[in-house]
Length: 193
Image: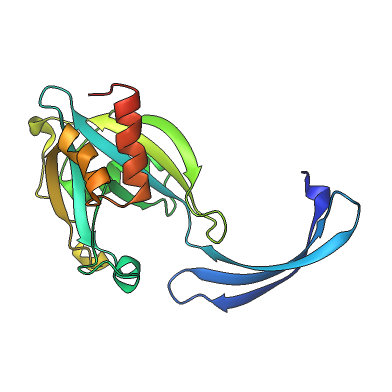
């Protein structure tokens, strides 16, 4: 597919309360040469970055636990979700963002990060692309308790978990966050720990 197969006809702003929700009307050129009109809603919350902190010596990872309203609305009885540290890029590049978020959320000041891939997490409705990173951590990198920023209403619990226990938590249903599952499975497949 190339850009000649899509013609954006109209973009209507539905909401810009938290992020931006648009209704997009476009024409799509089908294989048989006919144009078809489509309408979709697209939620633009910006792009993000996420990281798995790991300690080879102790075979541990750092994850976080926090309340996530959409999961609560969709049946998560506590609304709490165990997940990898993550944040929106704002005006930062992905590496700067993830270093900053790591310190704010986990209390670890890391310098060396490795980008492993990028992924659209919900491409049917959300524009966001997430940059995935891994980094080693050690006790001497701990500079604060973490927990997130008060002005961002973050109430984040920092968890240090045995790597194999964290992997088992995927199958027990204790970890249901997609980016976290992807990072743990990457670490498993690539023998990071």
